[in-house]
Length: 455
Image 1 (tube, one colour):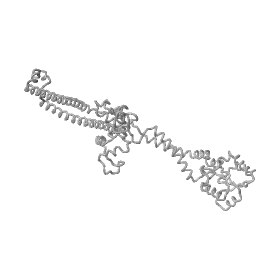
Image 2: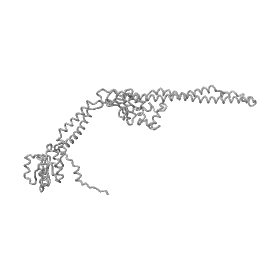
Image 3: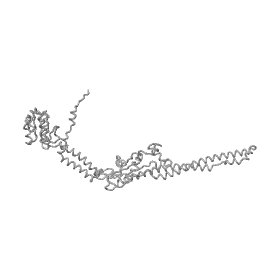
Image 4: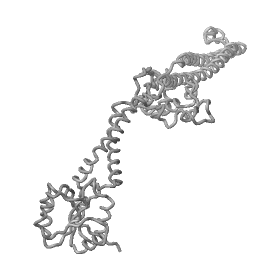
């Protein structure tokens, strides 16, 4: 059976109460420690700006012209194929081929490009952290090792565009420039190679078909026979004689057969000639594409620029100043907490919830508390001597008794006769261990501590 627990609003408010005054006093009492820790951390970050290795970032923007200057299939045989990869068929063609350039990014990061970049820039395995031997030391790094987690170098397709940004970060500005430049050059060469192979393959197939058709046409021209249709028009007399002579009839039949044979030969020749003409046109087109294949679909919008020594991207002084402020503040807070918990003298964090922070200035608050408990016998436990000018103010108060804090039977017997207790101590002077022991003892004896007062 599930039981519901009711928590009153007063208890909830009590749990959430934060004594800001205590926190402020605790921080103020540690102002020297806070200043030292904060300045040490802050100066470390500032100094790091000047002693840390400088990192240089080189980037370049590439526009990938996916239709090679036109979307017409008659001019670019690769337009439909590549646009189909983005949107599929005419949908992509109408949309202009916009979208993520997944295929281009894969080509750009393929070993066909990256391996050449690695060799051109002599990127080899070195000792780990410059001291630990590496079994692969001196060998060219792999494509996977070079690309790493995709952060350096980075390849990003700008959303909604056909632009790819290449970026490389290095401690050596010359190396960063050369790597980006190598990626671009080898990627462009790969495109030219792919286009050239496609066009040469198309040209070879069409040229073979053209030669076959031309050979067939020549064969038909050489074997052509029969008579032209005009031969029937000139055989009028023979046609008239065929009504009376069998030999004339036979001659007319032969002429008609020759004319029909001639018509068939001309039809076959015309068909072959049209085929040859069509293949000839395609062959000329294939030759033009072959010539165009040496061009690239890549347009460098932003060329990589060589940087000078002072044009580094990190570390930045302003950023390190902000980091120094943030981490200095955090370190100072931890230093205060650490010091408060380990201090051998009483600290503000060791005090309870009801505290009078200055007995001399706030004596009226203590007096009001004593008058409110006039019917109770109260022991005032002192850890430090009370100044005479303050002690004299207690003369007219009858329900109190002063007792020195101590771990003894006398102290226990004195406390046993009281109803409530007030503690008087001094931050930075009172022994913290004794203070905790006395509070623990009072708690075990079920004695209520009215307040903790500081002198």
